[in-house]
Amino acid sequence: MRLSEKVAVVTGGGSGMGAAICRRFVEEGARVVLVDFHADRGEAVARSLGDAALFVEADVARDADVRRMIDAAVERFGRLDVLVNNAGAPQPPTPITDTTESDFDRLLAVNAKAIFLAARRAVPIMRRQGGGAIINTVSVAAIRPRPNLTAYNTSKGAALVMTKSLAIELAPDRIRVNAVCPGPADTPMLSTFVGGDSAEKRAAFLSTIPLGRLCTPEDVANAMVYLASDESSFVTGAVLDVDGGRCI
Image 1 (cartoon, helix red, strand yellow):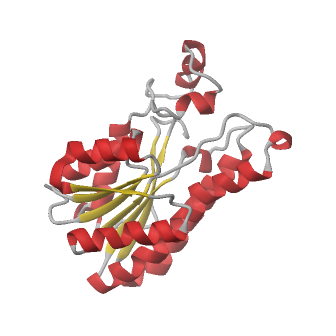
Image 2 (cartoon, rainbow, N blue to C red; image 1 turned 180 degrees about the vertical axis):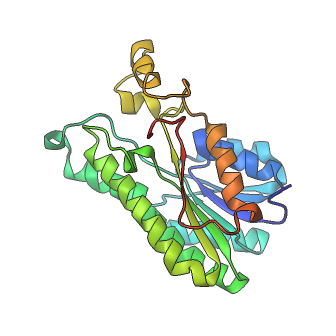
């Protein structure tokens, strides 16, 4: 019960890493506002978690939706202790000359601007409460960019710098801000990144991971529990690679 009495907002909670984060948080005693753009997926996960979870349908790149999801946490559970900016948009391998302006804008909006919007709404609440934790799901792409993913790499690089910038700005308020950088993960997004789901393409990715397997949603969720808990009370501005050693 490391998150007992804590209230968390988790974006992108309807599948993959987000769903695993919500489950682990509830197992550790938290109450969760599960946010997703896809109502069917989000509602299904929230129902499976019972009274400890509330689903909010939202587009995290729209300020009105972000304000509504943050307000929902306070209205339903009375406070907000943890904000997990997990929602993300992938990019299929695309040369820079074939990347459209709209694709670039979409990746920046979902992967970076959404963190700004959510933090802007959550910080005043956390300040009034005397502290809190913001955790951003970034990517090893921010540390070790791969070719033909310039828009995605850029969006995740912005998210990483924003994490550190917020950490130093909000430290006096006892609001900790950290990043988790998953490696290639066994989620629905994997086939997008590798350009198709096949044994050959998976094997190529596996060969780059020293621990010899893909990251799982549970790997990321366990890291999130630590950063959301009081066990990490002296950790801020950290970048936790959950990548099986891929960035070494």
